[in-house]
Length: 230
Image 1 (cartoon, helix red, strand yellow):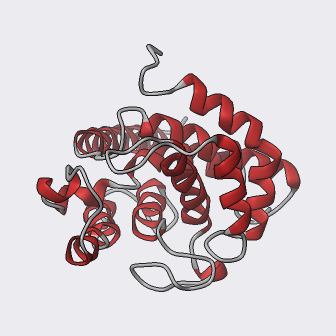
Image 2 (spheres, rainbow, N blue to C red):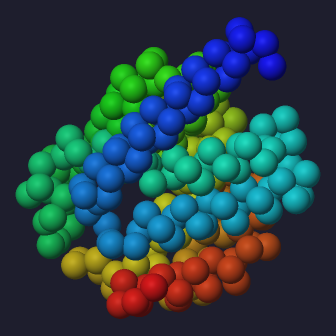
């Protein structure tokens, strides 16, 4: 290896290490402010892996999904709700359904999350790197296939693929998890809701991948219940 190539390799390794450290710190921040449940971030990370790998196996979105895409998506999935750092505790921890005003404020968290990650992104990678994907996931995972989501009202393939995958994983977990204001839905009820939301909230192709993996979703939900010692 030439001296110039060796220097470039060392620089890239240093940059990768620094980026990984920044990512780890952001994930720690997201976990501390996670208002959902203790293992929500673990479960959703595993769910998105199932969906991405199944889509790859199906040969869908071949121009976007490869092994690197799967790796990056799993790495950044825990950052999907990092924008909740900007939401007051009294809203995050409210043991009841939110009022309209509180709901409106909560709906700002995707834009806040994207802003946080985009501020870090400029220092680390280009528009196709890890931080860019993290910003897509944080900023667009509440968009809906029919264009009625938030914060930007994106529709169909305007929504980044990583965010479309995250959206289904996040909703399944929300449905099957207990909250102070609701009981957990059964796996079977959650599956029926995902089917109902095909073409409305969710990309129909991703729903098909989910249905092929739904037994594994149930296994993960069971293995990582909040009272589990795993």
